[in-house]
Amino acid sequence: MNDLHRNRTLNWTLLIVFAAALLYVLGVRTLVPPDEGRYAEMAREMFASGDWITTRLNGIKYFEKPPLQTWMNALSFQLFGVGEWQARLWTGLCGLLGVVVTGIAGRRVFGDRIGFYAALVLGSSFYWVACSQANSLDMSLASMMTLALCGLLVAQRDAATPVERRNWMLLCWAGMALAVLAKGLIGLVLPGAVLVLYTLFARDLRIWTRLHLVQGLLLFLLIAAPWFVLVALKNPEQPHFFFIHEHFDRFLKTEHHREAPWWIFFALIAAGSVPWLGVLLQSLVLGVRRVADADSASDAGPGPGAPRRFRPRLMLFIWIAFITLFFTKSHSKLPGYIVPVFPALALLVALYLDVGTRRSRMLTAGLSALLGAALLAFVPFMARLAKHPGEDLVYAACQPWVLAAGLVLLVGGLLSMLYARQMVRDLSVLVLAIAGFGATQLLLAGFEPIAAVRAGTGVLPALKAAGAMDPATRVYAVGMYEQSLTFYMGRPVTLVAYLDEFEFGLQQQPQLAIPTVAAFRDAWHRDALAGRRSVAITKPDIAADLLAQGLAARIVAADARRAVLVNIIPTTHASQ
Image (cartoon, rainbow, N blue to C red; front, side):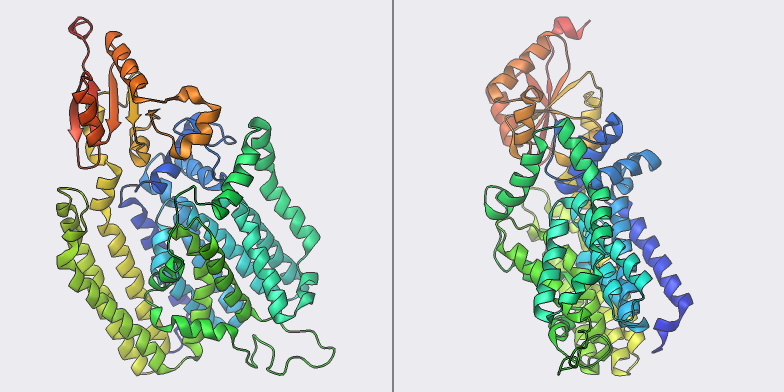
């Protein structure tokens, strides 16, 4: 049982089962706003319009992010139809790709067992699995950066042949180019800064002679540059907004209102590494230790005139530390920013699981069992999480899933601890990985009642009955914008008294929105006089105010977060 990493049949079986389970769960949840709805709707509009250059949201130019995610989602819609699992297919594949590439890099650089462990660790880490099943840019960026990191590690290892070094470095450059298309300059800045820091700390300037800079830069530009040129030609306002506002302003200013405590990313790394939390610190320490083994120079350093050996563990540690500290200093902090550190963390954890003590493996398994027990103890109190009236029943519907996840983590942790005590190392790691992955999948599937409420799909029957899906019906979004509901309606809406992320786009296309509630009331009245059906989606308090002000409308659906109004058409028109 300590040679499971050598069993090719087992390895392929685990990969197939992992891929099937990961991809199957993509369709069990409603698209959760804001991110999932936003990027699904952008892709739906791209697919419907056939314009693959200018990205739009709700019919309005939207240049906050590059198009890779939108392209892949639109392609998925074209191949498989418009739907929830199709909207998540790209991120699911990205999560799978990250696990496979990390496992290959671990095997090539450190050995078969490390590759096996690294794939298990990443494929079971809570945050990586969760982000693999959410339609957001974070997994797209993280997987492309994983290509860059793993390509660099394999290319620069001491045993690499010239052909291997060239091919893997080209993969690294391609990964950075795709990362730029996924989320912007960060895809080049972060790997580049890590390389500079590695050069300084390892005192290894010769690595720059092994990067295939000319071929790599050419490949990078061939992949990354064409869209930026084409979109700028069609939309001259795009470059300044994208490169200045969305990069420097977002990092340096607080205008996006995405501030968070300085420690938030450290907490997310800890929570996201479950079930491997018990060896997290030890694994990071291993990244900076200088030991005389195959992946590091000796304590004394190389002999006179000898080239310095590549130190992959130091590279991994710098990758984790720099990315974490970089976003810690940013004034804009969103949870997904930290996802790219997890493949590097998985490799370091795999290294520690190989050389660490039996006690440390028992500790991480025992801690995971305790976390499972904590989930079980939390179940009776879940209803207290409800923030809106009547939603306590929604959280109650999630309780069986949380209970099942807690049991899986508890039992898996205890079994893993038993196998660790018996020195059955591979089986101990495998059991804990299965438990971590299974618990995360149960939690994600059990989130569906909350996802449906947040997305507002409960009002879809009323919207359909009111004719909101008919292009002839005018649909207004008053004082709010429903990111997911718009996707499920399959059409854009007219924004009323709402800017937020649409501010720049509406500066270019002001005719696509109504700036004030007073102007909306006039438009609503004109629609009724013309016999045109109109629907408004708004917040319950805004709906109450509009009715109190005499708006000719009736509420046809409502929940704690939104209300749907339909206009009252004069009898003379209604009878026609």
